[in-house]
Amino acid sequence: SNLQFERYPELKADRLYLTLASEVSAQEDEIYSTIRNYNFRVQQFNGIIYTFWTVCVPEKIGAYNLPYFQASEQERRWCWH
Image 1 (cartoon, one colour):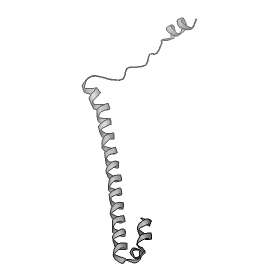
Image 2 (spheres, rainbow, N blue to C red):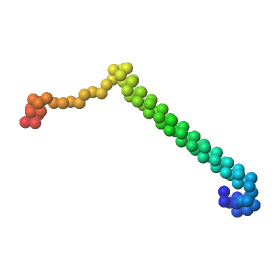
Image 3 (cartoon, helix red, strand yellow):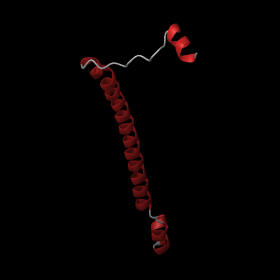
Image 4 (tube, rainbow, N blue to C red):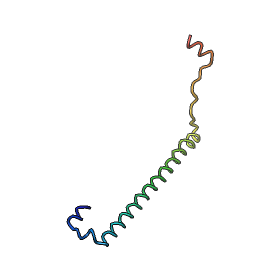
């Protein structure tokens, strides 16, 4: 942090410290990249599971979407007059 630089200005010029800070930053970037990749893969997996459960399982237990009600011409005339 900047506070460390203010208390110990010689650290600012210390090559070893700068190298370490750079490596830590690179490792953090790699960790965040890995987390983003993992979360993307989890999202894909969850989508597959959701699709499987909404498509395959209802078919196995005989659950299907019900058809919408559509009145016949005679029923429409009777209801609206």
